Image (cartoon, rainbow, N blue to C red; front, top):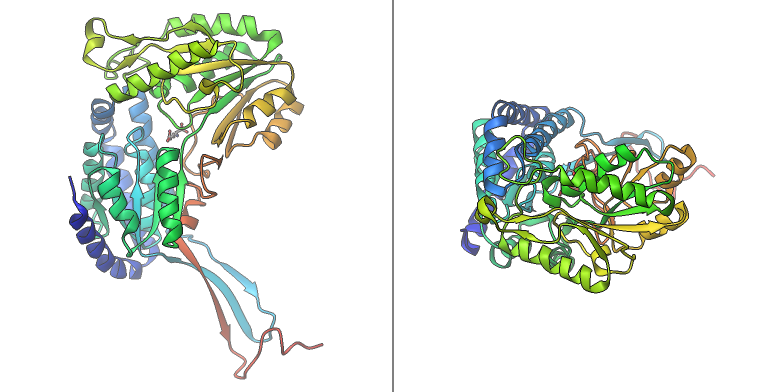
Length: 458
Ligand code: UN1
């Protein structure tokens, strides 16, 4: 565990190292990221196993998560040869105008336990290729993956001081990082509650802050949908990672004409899911992170029952036999849920999905957009008109057509509207906007004083 003094030491060392790092040509900085990518690739299996052991997601998904890190490394390494700025004409003769990206300095990164390595790569790789130094506070639940990533940076030849890991909780370590005057940008993924606290502090300090704070993601199933496909997509997005993704599907908005048949098929599919130790290749749903999470999920299920939702399946903690050794929650489906129920509005972060029935696409879109979050949404339909309506009208940062709400690819911007974020994006080229400042440069080669806005020809 680090204390506030450790944070200061890390930030000072980062500040020192960053000056030199910023002078390394970006394509050379990128070479380190290529090496990081290669090391992640070589160790994919070993890292995936560690990841499963540390936080519980099933091995197949752990491999997928490491793959996100590999993809991000190669993608951002490519950025080292781009980092595009703009050239623009000047209003004046013999004058050259351009804007370039410059590093911000020391960047503070705060990440959650559900994607202990991928989210850190979404943030640290663009920061590093752009010439910044990073001080990273991983979630206290997943320190091992953090150490592994730090070791890989070291082995790849990243100069000492450019990347730091500080362990500890939010109130001490996170706070010290957020408030440190030499940390210029904070990039945070986690709960809405913590994100708001960080944003308030950063607001006062005039510090740029990028927030990604979860979702209440819905899949719309229209009456013309391929129901087999919709069920597959929903099972994967709702119960993968035991529902502990910001992108997890936690609402299904189904057209009333197909509700009954859809529910029948969904129930059939849920019953085939094997729950257990994530290292077992046949297991589809692993444990949740800890007892506290288990209790929170269970509390929401009780709330759902009290609110009058109908429990179709699940709704209990698994405690028998081997399950007693972990934190297992039975995949849970509620139906006859109305959009204003708490289970349909609040992020549960567990394997619980609520089915809401609607009469039209208009109603489906309105229900989708009625929550305080706006990360991901999806529609299953065969009608091209529905597709384009959804693409335009679903108020989320990510929209899927004929796929579940999870599975974002790293070269597209990741983030959302409303309570999900504050307008910034992780991943994709948009991530560079968080970790760079724009510098506008004017070069006058006329040899005389030229005054913009005054020395006009007319
Ligand atoms: C998260 O849950 O915070 O789109 C990240 C997805 C993954 C990332 C999820 N690629 O589901």
